[in-house]
Length: 113
Image 1 (cartoon, helix red, strand yellow):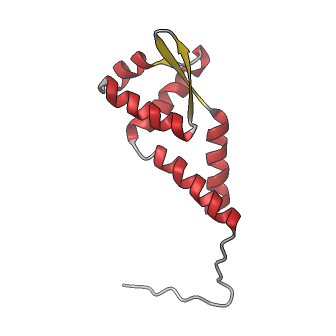
Image 2 (spheres, rainbow, N blue to C red):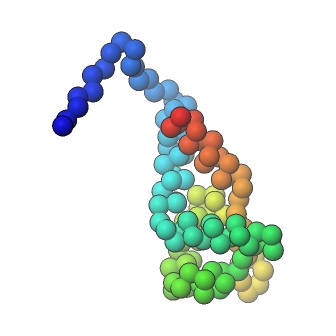
């Protein structure tokens, strides 16, 4: 059975510049989370956060993916702001950016609630 949605005077949609900005920010962040490996990386980093982060090589063995694939997933998460990286030669230490997680949560609530 197909149901038709009818607009009424009580159902109006308006879009402000702020709405458009929030929707764009939300889309960028959501896209960064749109792969199971990236979600898994965040979960691993969150679990290891008490010990100060996680080195890239640890992620490779944990995920069972090629180094280049893990590096690309880390790049996407870093570019979106979900993680930070600190050089500890010769490797990088990755940590979750809790401010970005909070921003994503806030945007989700503002847009979808």
